[in-house]
Amino acid sequence: MEATYYVSALASVAGASKRHLAVFNASGSGKLLKVYRVIAANAPTAAVTGLVIPLTVGRITTVPTGGTNPTINKADTTNADVPAQVTAHAAATGGATEEASTFGAGVVSGEETSAGANALMYESIINGTQPIICREGQGILVKQGALASAGAINACIIFSLV
Image (cartoon, rainbow, N blue to C red; front, side):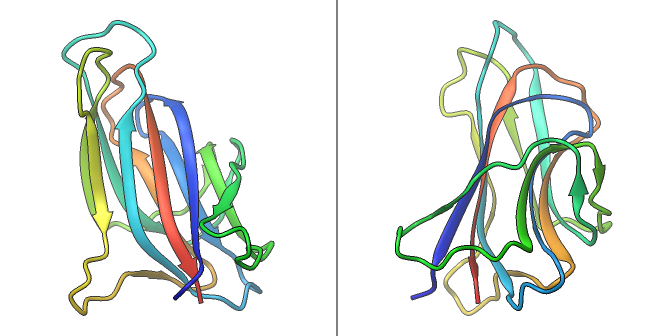
């Protein structure tokens, strides 16, 4: 069984074209980053109605800059530590050169009364297909579309390193 890691951006405030969460595998890690699941859920902060937060999942080819560095959590506390070259980024303001294509998309609601407002934007299916592989110098990004919207989201990326 591969060691599994989780990273989240909690209550990330909506913003047009915002980079909510990313994981980057920099040169020198000696690892492949395998992405298994990317999910998002609403985290409403105020009474708003009729607004949605469109999200996409895509590959990046440069490390994000700015923002904060959320903690990468181990599924099992005895898992190996993540190499220093594998980093997490929330609300990055620069870097993160994005590829044109996406692996998935979803919409969550910014409404405080909306129940079950979550999106499974990417999942590796156990049917022989490959998970998203991020080699050294690549990463994965959860980004909001150009709609300004309102509210906040929680986003989570689940991955392994081999």
